Length: 203
Image (tube, rainbow, N blue to C red; front, side):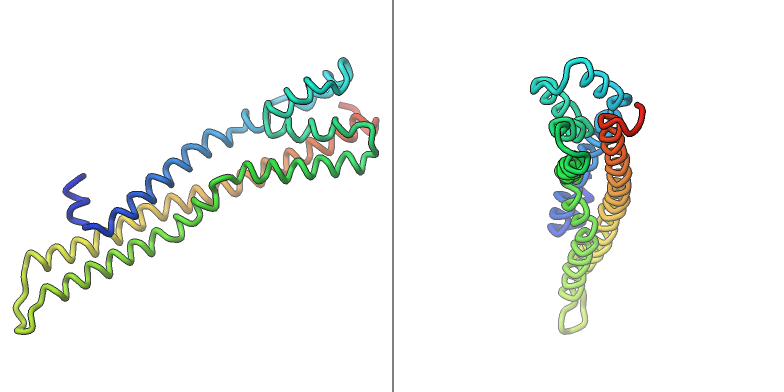
């Protein structure tokens, strides 16, 4: 591994740093966006039952809001149970925007890495090409060692830039799609909560 880095030259280091950051973000988001963590199964029914038994106690609402992103949305609705359904839905939408921002955390960084990594690879290629041209003397003679090193820098950086960019873009698009689906499901659960508590539908 060290020999590969050495062959790729100093331009490889920004790509290595970018790859470490991308891997950390991907691992963190895979863990944080699990369905069981964002939207625990049966939480809506459980929330409605607890509300009908104990009311909207502050301790219960705090526990619900801190338990999951869906719980945060449901708690925002229940805190406004005395208001009209329109006000209740508005509070749920406001909470949903805060939840969306939290779910999308670090995604802009991942998308930036996906876009910039090929450019960093191209920069390494340019550095390699400069070294290749520098290996040729005015008389036409060339230094084989310097020539080979320039070619290594150019090729390794191009390849590593793509290796970093492709998975980063794949996971960026995957996370975007998953978050959109989660937000849609939570919005539907919030609307259902309003209808249930105001007697417009059964649980």
